[in-house]
Image 1 (cartoon, rainbow, N blue to C red):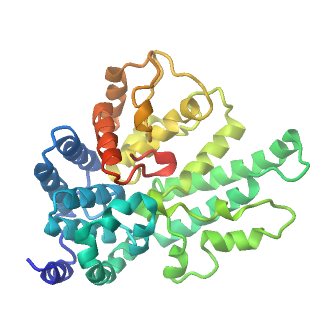
Image 2: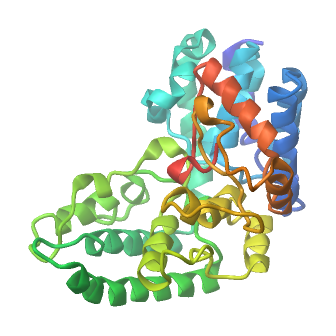
Length: 373
């Protein structure tokens, strides 16, 4: 089928996957189980056609999907030279926040260099234009404004000022980040976990695109950069768009727990009971691997060693040469038990996925700190 016809068909149906069975597609536990199935088919059994079928069927059932899943599906479609599937998955990506300029990032070189993409890339602009409003209209702009404010203000407050002692810093920053967390918890109580589904993915010009002036992160940077009461760098406010996810909430939680809970508390980033996080995952508000990152953070970042009895997901990007380097006290079976409870793929599938992506120079890690590999 000619690519023009493919794109025309996608636009007319608004768009291939849009508005199909969305009324019944509320259980994101099943969504994640489907994605795990697709990844097993692709990266363990190498049945790429079955994997694409599983991705396709899943995307038909869910309006909102996590963008990184679309990117993996796009790469697999290119890998087996399936033009129709590539167009369909690219359409779904546009409906979930993908912007053509993201293809300039190093992580997406495989797509950018593929002959199918280059043959038809001009036509994809039409597809993007036809689907962008679908994504923008789904964003809860009130929640996005609030999260942008909370994130950007915390970034301005978190750094030590010149000649500020650690004690003075803590006396200043602790009450500020405590207030930020209190405001965040009010938002969570009112709207649910504010991440991809509620506020969209990281995008440096999203507020301007929505018509709100002087509210993007870089606008906040311009506000603070010459203020002697704050010490900020542009990099704090220049989003890592290539992670293809929302990450505004996670740094706030880590900063708060570091200041108020103590670095030796292994569950310090978890402000709610597991049942709450599971409910948010089921609703699609929270990606399960974001939860796992918060759980694993004390072990992976601050040097605490997980021992038998600790809940540990072994989440995130691990270079191929250290894939097998994990605490001996936490066997794969135990790790996989924790992963299954929170709808995360068994670690063997994750490792097979990383190996495949690395060997084929496809996109590596997604999410904050690579947690959504």
